[in-house]
Amino acid sequence: MYFCQTIQNLIMTPFFSKQFEVGSHLIDKKFDIRLPYLLGYMQEVAEQHSADQHVAWEDLQKKNTFWTLYRMGLQFEQFPHWHDTIDITTWANTPDHLIQPRCFEIQNQRQQVIVKAYSLWTILDTINFKPQIVSDIVGDIIPCSDKGKDLFEKNLKIPKVSISDASPICTREVLYSDIDTNNHVNNTRYVGWLLDSYALDFLETHHLKTIIINYTSQAHLGDYYEIYTQIKDCNTHFSTIIDRKTNEEFCKIKTIWTGISQPR
Image 1 (spheres, rainbow, N blue to C red):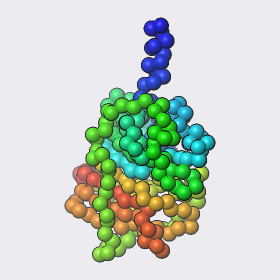
Image 2 (cartoon, rainbow, N blue to C red; image 1 turned 135 degrees about the vertical axis):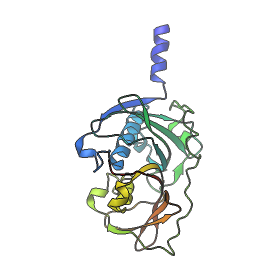
Image 3 (cartoon, one colour; image 1 turned 90 degrees about the vertical axis):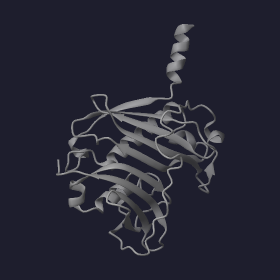
Image 4 (cartoon, rainbow, N blue to C red; image 1 turned 180 degrees about the horizontal axis):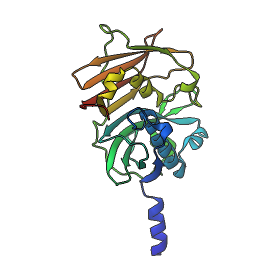
C-alpha cells in the first residue's frame, strides 16, 4: 500500500523539470543565451508537462481548442551562459476562470536560481478564438501549487504605450522564419524583434533585469510591424509593436535594465 501511494504522489506532483545545455549556436555577443531561445526552452518544458497531464496541444485539438500565452514576466539574476547546464522547472498555479497561471524557475549547474518567471495562459476555441473557462476544458486533472504566484502583480498588465509623440525605432516585414505551425508569428519572436531594435552600444553596456510581455494580437507572414519605445527613466522602458498599416497592436513589452561598466 505504501509503495502504491508513493507512486501516486510522484505522478501527481505539480512540478516538472528538464535539463538543457547552452550551446554556442544559442548565445549572443556576450556569451549569454539569446532570450528567444530561452523562452523556447521554457515553452518546451511547459508543453511536455502538459503532455504528461494529457492537456497538451494534441489533447486540446480534439476539443477544438488550444492553449495560448496571454502574458509573461521574467526576472533575471543572471542569464544562462555558454556551456552552462540549466534545469528548468515549471508548475501550474490554481486556474482563475479564463486564466491558467504557470510559473518557471531556472537553476544553473551550481543549483543557483538565476531566472524566475510567471505566465498567464488561456484556452481559445479554434473557430471563433473565444476564451474558454479552463476547468470546462481540462477539468481538475492538473496538479497545482501556489508557489511563485506573488512573483509579479497578478495580472501582469502593461499600461497603454503612446506613440503620438514618438517615431518608430524599427520597421520591418514579418518573414517566414518568424511564423510557426499555427501560421502566425511565434510568441518568442517578438522579444527578439525588440532587442534587435536597440543600439549595440546600449546592449553592450546594459543587462536586462526584468521583462514583461503582453500579447495582444497575432502578426502574420507579410505584415509590416513598427516598434516604438518610451523611456520612463534611464532603466525602465515601455515598448509597443504595431501593424504599420492598421496601427493594431501585436504586443506591449516592459523592460527594466541595469547598467554595467564595460562589456563582458
